[in-house]
Length: 160
Figure (cartoon, rainbow, N blue to C red):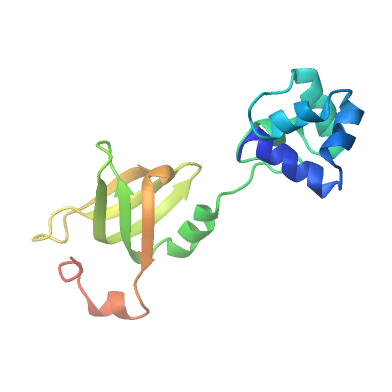
């Protein structure tokens, strides 16, 4: 989310109009409007003052992945990976060339920060030859869970 969107959201949460915030910052309403539309950026001292007035952290206004108090926010994909950890899933992710790769059978072994260790079937004819890959979470496009019992009924060869 952009600085302008976060500023507008925090201002509305405090029930302030652009004009009221502008008055507290000693700027024009048009300046606040330009900041909120990302047409211009406030000076550093204005960001600090806005954070105080709106009771949010400067980190929240300036960085992605930070809540109003400045604490890191876990992305929703982390909850999904926790559910998928150790289970067979269908996984689509992007590799270096930007083309999506679909693996019908893989197991998310673990994940940390921005990366996941994923066991994938490399050779369809020799399912015992699996490979563990380190995949950036940002490259994962979709995770599809197999229905209960489906993974037990089907072998990795049948999943592709």
